[in-house]
Image 1 (cartoon, rainbow, N blue to C red):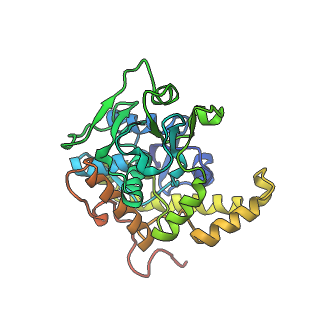
Image 2 (image 1 turned 60 degrees about the vertical axis):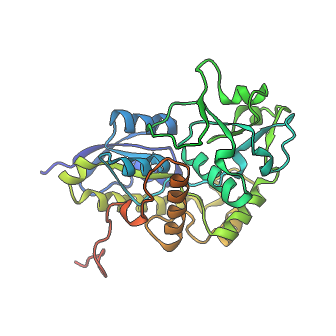
Image 3 (image 1 turned 180 degrees about the vertical axis):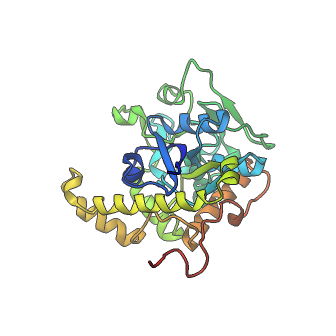
Amino acid sequence: MPKNVHLTLACGDYEILRGLIEGTTSPEGVDLTILKNMDSTTRHWRFLRNNEFDVCELSGSSYLMTRDQGMEIDAIPVYPHRRFRHGFVFINTSKGIKSPKDLIGKKVGVKSFQATAILWMRGILEHEYGVPHKEIEWFSDLDEDIEFERPKGLRLTRLPDTTSVEKELVEGRIDALLHTDLIEPIVQKDPRVARLFADHQAEEVAFYKKTQMFPIMHVVGIRRELVKQYPWLPINLYKAFNESKAAGMKRMFNPRIVPLAWYTEAWEAERALLGPDPWEYGLSDRNRKTLDAMIGYSHEQGLIKRRLSVDELFLDVSEGKKRGSFRV
């Protein structure tokens, strides 16, 4: 009996990926070994620097850089992680920062400069709030997943390993922080730290109503040599990711699955705003607009030298017009 292709998939432990992780959904012709016990930054670094995985949930920002620099990585239009980011801008409460424009001229920390969450928030601050990224002095915690030539006028300093952006913020050596995660001082309710946007959800709702963009964080990358060897792989992976998402959403529709008193109400309110499938894959008009904005931010901030087009980002996962189903 013919054997399936054996591949590794590194990804987050998400409900919409549960079918793939547990094996109830699988790409036809493929056996997957799932690696899910890594934080995002580790997973991205290991894929981009060490080429350790066959398929990888990958930083959208870093993926744009792989295309710009000609690296041997392709992707399918699957977006396992999206998130609004206004709630991840933190300030030291002693610095007199009351509004976004108060960040101009300040020292601001980032986890890494190219992280997708931070790319989005820099772009949003610049375009929606009038805060030019070059009028801030940046301090990063980590080395970059992919090295890039820093553009003229960008002030970026890597902190020594003996400290962190969270510590620098709490102790007042930097004024604010854009981060990918909810930082520990906020979790511990440290009075020295607060969010820039006190009602960040209201800001995010307003941003969505204005732009119709639910920011894409991650894509699914594939080593190019595998695509050359197995041309059918991108379509089969794409279909399996969609099947897993559909099954996850069906489970999540059951209010008993989540221990929240008003879960159904939150679910219904979100769908009323974002539509029936906020996590839609593919290249719909809404996804194209979101991806094009991310490309624009990346080019503007000097991470990519050429303004890519959406159409050159992803492998073709179409099966031809009026195709994609079969009859016995």
